[in-house]
Amino acid sequence: MDARSDPGRHLKEQIDSLGPWFQNMRIGGVETAPEHFLGDYPNFKWQGFRHVIPDDLEGRSVLDIGCNAGFYAMEMKRRNAGRVVGLEPDPRYLEQARFAAKHEGLDIEYLQMSVYDVPKLKERFDLVIFMGVLYHLRHPLLALDLIYEHVAADLMLFQCLQRGDERLPELKENYDFSEWAVFDRPDYPKLFFVEERYASDPTNWFLPNLAAMEAMLRSAGFVIRDHPEREVYLLGRGQRHYAVEPPTFVCG
Image (cartoon, rainbow, N blue to C red; front, side, top):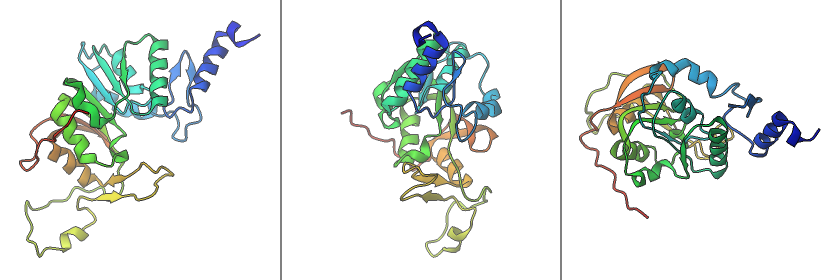
């Protein structure tokens, strides 16, 4: 019996041909990354914070930035979201996402773009998903500023890898130029720069501690509405820091 006469085998061969997959998803009952080093990822993580997103998104628009194979975009479409757009700069992941959505019969638009391209969309979305991307960026604050300025209308589901101290310090608004000791505090907001690799990944550039992550989000204009589990936030759109200038963008 060849693959053409065995639909399940044919589907698995198609999925394997698109691999390797970073997101383990179930397409027609076939798992895309059953041997993932994190387990059933990202589904097992999703189960811990899915309650912060309404079960029925009532036609609201969703933008998934750095969507990989489209796990979150597909989950939002299954929750009755209206227009769903996924951005992914890697063509291999983009092909996986398009294949998965088509097979599951979900109307999702996928574009080969990075977070730095969001001004080109000229559109704001009710929900922005920005999961597991920030620490891979050379310009993390620029990314947050661009999202705030151009595409975030209301909510953002956000996650970023964190390392270091997990306390939130009480800090003064200002310190004299002669003050040095505050920077030696383990809980002071810090971004750890990775020059070479972390977890064998050369794109893991910046790893914030908890205080830095939350300070960066506030500075960019986001309000923490919920913090359902470590590293995961549901954010609202608030007021950016008074000293932050809106990012300029030249369309190429």
